[in-house]
Image 1 (tube, helix red, strand yellow):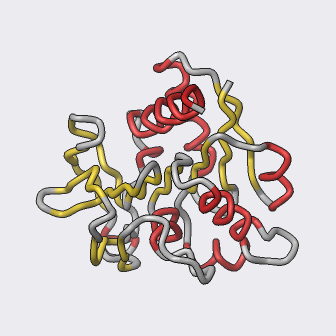
Image 2 (cartoon, rainbow, N blue to C red):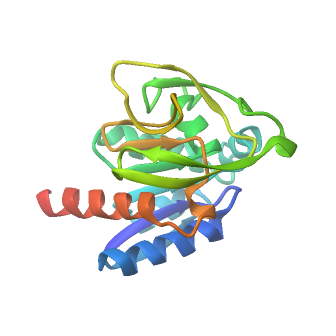
Length: 202
């Protein structure tokens, strides 16, 4: 049984729960979802993988770095402790992976431009080339960030036309769109399958 930690600071958290449950059903991989609101939740649940949902990155930083929560420093420390730990960050979660702001380096080798695709009114849906899944995927873009620069240690895992909208460094995947808002659980299946493989090999 895999333990999946879900960062509960903001964003479409319950949509991620539904997507993870669909992914579990599709893959046959059993999971327990642990809601992470403070550092002690992370310590007690000992997750095998973490999901960092979207939301508003500034608000997430304020909430997650608050002394009562201290969740973000604990999450970043958890990620840095093992370079191969699987992480899925979507929209604002992708921003936090690219720019953790904790004094350490980026967790995916890319920089981001907040709201790069425009305002809330300019949100849109489009078919993307999900390279990681080897098929098309319904991309939902809501005040989405854009990758401004992608380093050599990042692999492009999703494209919208010629533009990268998903990158991965080791097992840390950052998506500028919201896969949890579609009915396609492909990226959540990737997370479970990758985690299961890491757990078996460990």
